[in-house]
Image (cartoon, rainbow, N blue to C red; front, side, top):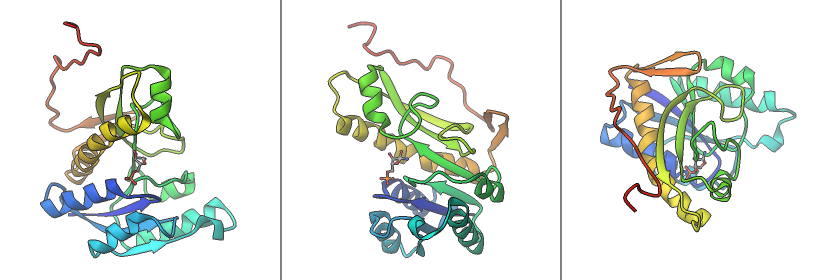
Length: 217
Ligand code: GRF
């Protein structure tokens, strides 16, 4: 059983999917603490509904990023977390923070990295005219959305999509791949080698293929 610390800033639908997966036994672990930098984040309510301890640290109240991150790291250590999962946490973590949790911080991003890192990426994908986008769970390094990739899921993008439509399509998959990535971590099935993450006993399907628009249209 691993202990998971989840960092949030917003609605917490990914947090919900992680808590639900723990409850179902799809993750061999439990959410030990939820930390937010936004006092009214709905994610905090979700945690409370699941009887999970919550902490709020307002970044505005800290003189610099190091002291803010250090306070969060201290709390995560107090709760003895094995894994730190960022779930809509809208702050970039310092290298000093990451050094305290080597290869133990993961994030979910609503695009197919390395395409479209950063913010506002669903609209950027639509505006670029890509045929596919999706979501990515990756280990966090000191860059923005640059760390080694654990799992990705792909959805079609249509030129007349609204951001909301694409968001709905992507987030449904986020809620599946984030718990899956965490369970792979919990099983000790992930091995990082440089930029690559090897998954133990990976089932390969070299025929996997998506085409949009379809070949027969
Ligand atoms: C998700 O789209 C996730 O990919 C991104 O932030 C959003 C968080 O949504 N990192 P929620 O708070 O989990 O509902």
